[in-house]
Image 1: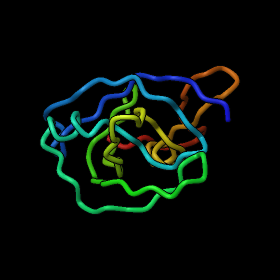
Image 2: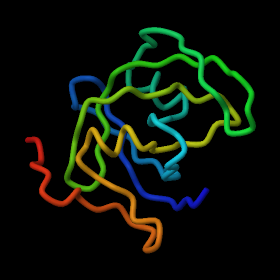
Image 3: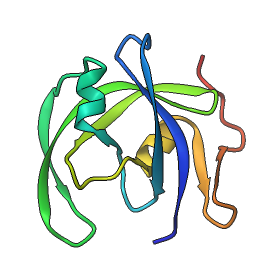
Length: 120
């Protein structure tokens, strides 16, 4: 799996407070992940607990919530996983797609999807 890092911002659900994070872009993951302490510090509370398949094949359970994520000039409310101590901040393929973005693994960058209309 090819990965690279990108700076993102995770915000509260109103988009009033933000925290910058260095996150791995992982095309084998679907969702965005952020440290639990960052999300809770922003006032984001878990909405439900889901089962996820770890890259090593293990089935794990993590809390998730809908909150704001900003990558570059794009901001979107997406599902964010509450990462535990050993979990890295991550941006997955579904998150990128929801934001009309795509990973260019050869260049190690994120770019708008060609022809996509950006949301306000």
